[in-house]
Image (cartoon, rainbow, N blue to C red):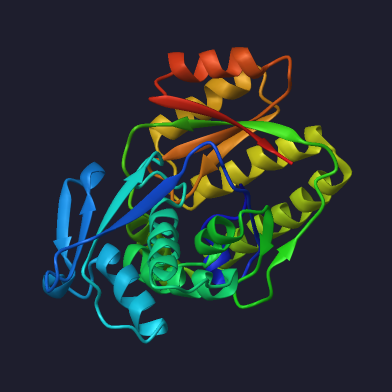
Length: 297
């Protein structure tokens, strides 16, 4: 919700779970000696664990879990389905990994705690993102609104009044690894400018937490607008995202910004009960491939 990209450089971020979309993994026994096969019809992939490369994320989630549990490869088929948009900035990779890890551990007779699952998912996130912040695995596994600083204990915080956001999907896939890498290259070329932007984003995150804790939605919306402007300066927005952000604001959203890695994927808009319908329609008219309304509470 706040703090994209800057979170990789030690600044805080706020993330919230979106329970309307889910990743699901199921296991069935396979013939003796057949090993583990992972089936992901959404990705049009069938992966045999014994043949998968080390950089294959789905296989890495299975291997990491087996290693953690000190278990040999079982004879099973794992089927994965997900209603999350892929490469859309909604933590789809983390959600799929968490589903695989949970179902595999349960199948082998273990119940892993959230901290262990989050750590295993984080290792897979390195394959998706290169230098992940840790926020996707944290918010997906714990399923709570979190205030996150890399390397520090997770913090949950009070939401004074439930509020609603619209999530507009540009329909453009945008692998986070690419934008994270480009921001890193920019930071290396001009560290003082980029660190100034990161600090400003960090301040906005801190103010956003206080606004949520006191229920000040007008202030929260203004901070979303400001965070988006800073992300534009980091060159991680795109015309399609900007068009949806502008459409939401014109339709009455209290604020709007891109969400996730950027250059595609999703944006979010802060709603009031009076503007929910108008914002949803405006996003659809402006080209959103889908719009999800979710409550943060």
